Image 1 (spheres, one colour):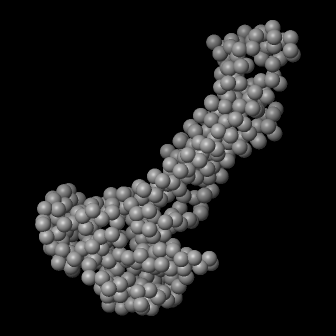
Image 2 (image 1 turned 45 degrees about the vertical axis):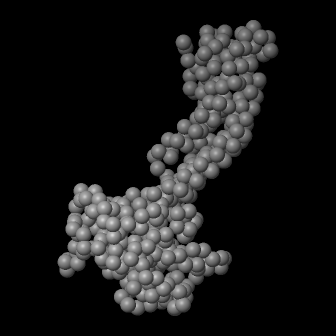
Image 3 (image 1 turned 30 degrees about the horizontal axis):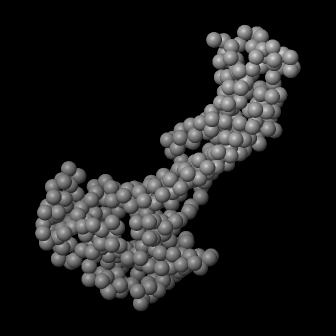
Length: 389
């Protein structure tokens, strides 16, 4: 079957460029929403997954879905610390960090609206367990003091959280002596202070989690079995990477489902717009259709030509929408994590998979919107077309 040249299809869109741009613009808006939602979901996952280290293990109370719901007694933490297979630092100390984690309500800069922020009690060993964390300003807090360091997102987004400022919570004034950068991970949305001071201030007698580094990642299953088999512990161990990946699932899935549903609803309008545009194109070019048929182009070639025109139109809209969505990568945004109820700062992330999904969605809209007009064009008879021309 002889095919109609692509140049002919593209030329017809250029001849009707005003209509083409208006229709493509409608599709671009839908694609922008669709791509932005996928980028938001990916950004949340990427932020939390990046929080964990591949050779770190986190221990929580059995059944606790997050650190704020967990409780580990000092005696239990000591047993975990004494297990074989835990890496040590240069001084021979086990690389173990016993950490209380609580939520604190702080006012945001500008609006003054309160939002939950994660406050973590940690130590020098805790910092060694997070090699991706580096100080941007100031210094690390001193053990045994009411000094704190804040993540980059917290320092920028909350009142009293910048270097040299003072925060009041748990009945104390806490001086911010440093601001750290955690490389875009979830730690950027946390406040860190001395673990023992945090326990005293918040009147707690149990840690929330115990984090340690393995000498060899292949030893994880044996350590996990030892922890879960000990009746004194009632704890469970997870690779830190997997734990933080699970923390992202509820929020990322909710955003993905909600956004995709809205995109599908909006796409109906874009498909109708494309269909109207293609019906108008068929009505204006009945004479051309008759000429093409008279020149020997079969019905299938006419069908593919008009269908290709619709899909090319949707591809233009898809590229415009995708280009606009890509600019969102420069935007920092925050939301509440469903697992922890704390504010989480993240960036939109565009991946090759999202690009392909977005363009396929655009082509699908073009196919659905253009098929019926293309079918009608292909079914026109040569005599009727030439008569109307």
